[in-house]
Image (cartoon, rainbow, N blue to C red; front, side):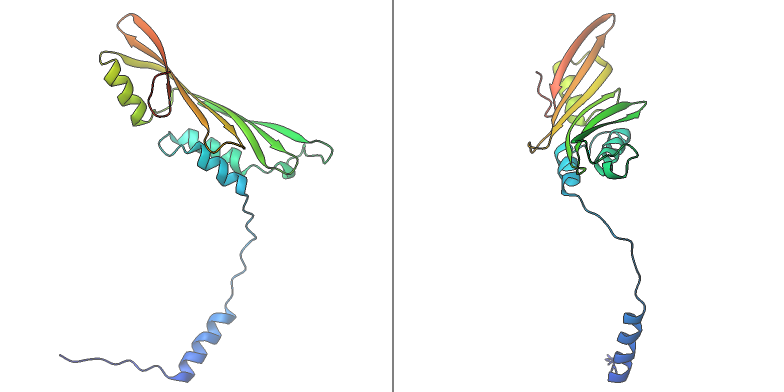
Amino acid sequence: MKKLKFVLMPAMLIAGLATRSAAQINLPEVRIIVSTYKYLNAADNREMAQPVRMLERKAAVYDVKKSEYYDDDYDGYYISFYIPDGEILAAYDKDGKLLRTAEKFKNTKLPAVIRDAVMQRFPNWTIAQDIYQVHYYDHKEKADKTFKLLLQNGDKRMKVKLNEEGKFI
């Protein structure tokens, strides 16, 4: 077998580093808000449908200070985010920190844990309607999540309520 050796001359190395440092790219300033990540981690809706995740991201990155209604005199702001599938009412302080949310989504794709729990306990029933609610508070690590379902079996109907772990309440 033949072995190949690459030798890099010192002059070529210096020339290469000089061209790299001269070609700098100026990127826009990125502002990271810790409360944004705290909210998204607390809500943790990776298994939920795209509209739920999209609206929560909008609430998380909303900048109160850039709003046309912003005024230094007010201590807090209530902002509503709407889509046909749901809504979020978010409370922000005057610095733009997300303090709490009340969220409600109708007839969205349910996580597997919820579907499996319903099918196991009520095998002959179907989910006719569902409401997904989230209550986030800044001082809590996890958001409170509940699923209110309307089950149907022929002409019989029943309402059930589950937590995020699939336990009936």
